[in-house]
Length: 79
Image 1: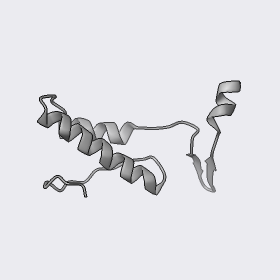
Image 2: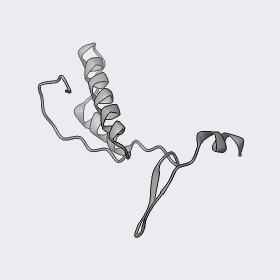
Image 3: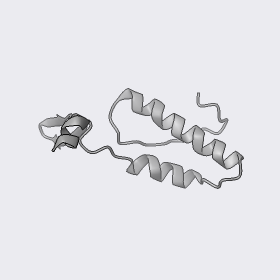
């Protein structure tokens, strides 16, 4: 897990353990697309994982002290 025999390092900035599983799913999906004729480079996968950001969902806004915000999507839709 993942099923691909090549081992490589991927970095994500999204917080939460579940985001690692989401990233693995994205990597495997992109690799599957490549096997089916869509060219998705490893560089593109790495860049996409690195730049992925979900503003306001669970976001670290300060390092000293550590401050996180968690904003409900419903609040955003109402404003």
